[in-house]
Image 1 (cartoon, rainbow, N blue to C red):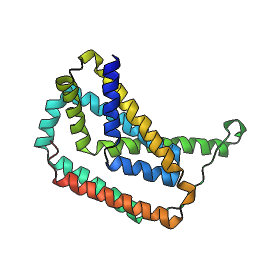
Image 2: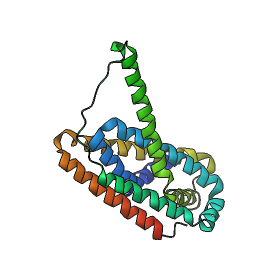
Image 3: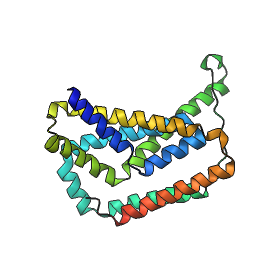
Image 4: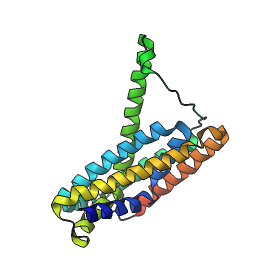
Length: 219
């Protein structure tokens, strides 16, 4: 069991340092908006990964055939990445100060509306994380490859796969939180111009990934 968990953690470390669009979006969100929004985006990414893992394990062959038969999927994903990149380049944002709200001190409808608004906002961040991961067909393909590697190369028994991939996902999330934390330290030290330049860089990266997705054989 310990060996299985170690293998899972090592795989999680490897995946955590793969550079993809999620990596740059998390850093940008952490720098511009703070730790909480970035963590909620990462929670959405984590949920999407779990769903993809389940799909990869039970429907791998069917998914690969579907991706081959419906090549337009990658063009839709590419268009979304490029659109997000253009928005990131055009959007201008200034540093935002964090607001710590004491729930016990809130006793007016207006203040409670503020809390409800924040909850809806955090849900939006989670959905953004899910969408950001879900639109990239390459993510599903590498989880299929991960399932194949775990069973065929590492010979992880089926009943222990949940522990293996649980360790993988937990490690990925933990390392992402560290990235988010250290990136957030830059938030109050950057000028609006610097923040805009970060948006331009992230936008260009997203456009680049969109082009890569469009021209790459995803299956």
